[in-house]
Length: 161
Image (cartoon, rainbow, N blue to C red):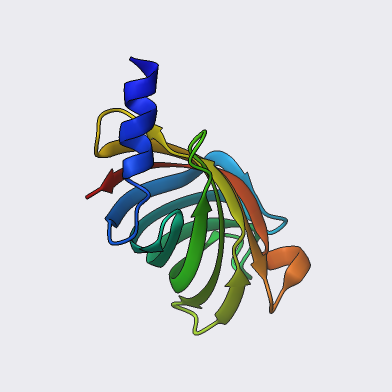
């Protein structure tokens, strides 16, 4: 049975296959110097351009409660929309993937940021098409390295077709 699962998982990493993923992180699963609370939701769509190699586009929404307060003493929230491109390499033998991407983020306060986004994750196949994908990520801010960078854990639900 395990061999059958491994064969069906490996078949999903072939050139020409498509991929869609919805993921979330936050609620204590990430850390940034400036954030008190963070909730992130994202949507990723990709295409395998060669066996085990995928290129993808990502759109994310971040809601953050920042550590500092504004001049009236009330809590300060910041919402950010991020768009990016990246690539992944899947290790067929075990389902682990290594990813690297670039993202552009824009806040409602007109603050722009660029991120380099390495990640390591695992594609756990529930059936031939559906996966649960935990991943450890690092969003390295190019504009504010110490305050704007985030490390965390995200959980996604992927569909390979």
